[in-house]
Length: 461
Ligand code: HEM
Image (cartoon, rainbow, N blue to C red; front, side, top):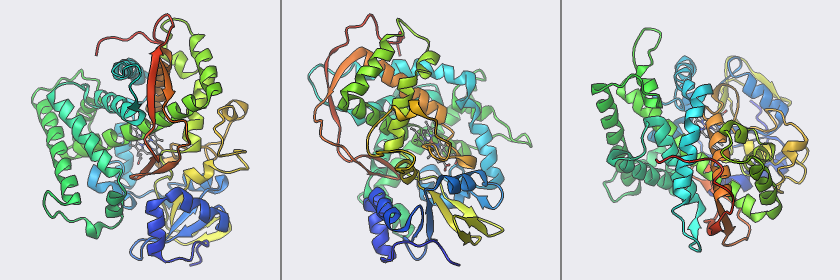
């Protein structure tokens, strides 16, 4: 089978570069081999064909159910965190069923319920920062997104169990962002628990503590069901499959962990990047404030959601340094697939490189420049711009993440004057299985903003 060309260095050398700096590794490969190339990370892992050509991406992502599948067993790298019943790790009909169960809470009317939570939580977090005292913006945005997702999933983010769970999850995901843990995830044979002092052992124990809290919450809900609950856990507990069976505790745990993990880490990083760009580039900040200030008192969140420049800033934030640099893997099945001049045999594994696609000069002139205007000047197809992936595994939280970014930014910008402590350049680096800033971004509140009122009225949380 002839695979597209790729680097000739040993798999171990490729793995080291992949773990240490995946974005520069992908860029180097694309320079030498073009927009379809093959990398090899380990002799026990299949070669990976990376694709950043929009036509080929369209073929891959729209073909999910015919010559291509998106099997969950290729996402094993997530299994230690989210379990084997997660939408991440399931395949075929089971995967489809879980998606159907998970999607309703992220659509339509239900999204309105989250607007107030996002605004209130943002206001509460941001008001803790005192004038003149620098703070790490990633910690602030993580505090916002963790509380918001706790509220959406459990209907609570305060109380002893919720606070403990937030603490454990924060620690767990902080650890999951280390390169050592990523290396362990790619080499499952090294995942041995040698007791509480060993790195993997500590990770497992934190995980068990978080699991225990989730199981306690599920047990309590089963003993005292409140059928009118609108949080995601209530909806999942009430859901029945085609033979009338509810989800088991283990299935519930895995899906909750998936949503908690997927739902806050990514959005926290996206928000931190957005604030970095807004406060690094004065003209961006001015235009945004002009747009927000024109709304008057207490605008409807749906109006904020539709603001063109705010939308362009969020879109450009997710273009230039996408938090998810890759789509989940897809696999050629049943018949060979013609793709970009290659005949790919069944069994070939394909990854959409979101990062490389977003860096294409032909689609995004001066791709390293942050220019929200590109999103006002033209529309990009779903295969030129795909921060949330596409097809059978497209991100379930897309609308939720966009709403959260926009409302949190609107709230922060309209209530505080902020500055970056260090205006030097920040570049992206690997942060666990996703990406994030390569150094802490510190900001400082310089004053309260002198406008009539914060953009949205808050209620007590
Ligand atoms: C800025 C924030 C976010 C980004 C950039 C992002 C990005 C992505 C990407 C690239 C994928 C893979 C799609 C594919 O392979 O085609 C994905 C999948 C997923 N995301 Fe997100 N995501 C974000 C926020 C969220 C939120 C807030 C939630 C839930 C609360 C969420 C839940 C999921 C789930 C459950 C999947 C797996 C879908 C499946 O396997 O069928 N994500 N996301």
